[in-house]
Amino acid sequence: MKTILVVEDNIPVREVLRCRLEHSGYLVTSADTARHALASLDHFMPDLVVLHLDLPDMTSLELLRT
Image (tube, rainbow, N blue to C red):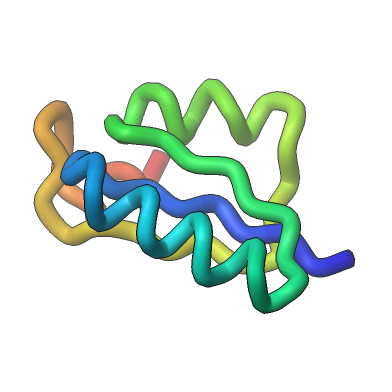
């Protein structure tokens, strides 16, 4: 099963993405901050990351460089 990490600080948007992707057959985990995303990467290696551009704790480009 393909896995997706959704990194989005807006709760309704994050939940809609999660629900739609799960309904399409993906295993989805989500994070509301870049730090939470990094922590989840310690035990979850996704096939795809859906990343919000401007997170509360760092930008998406900073996260990608980490």
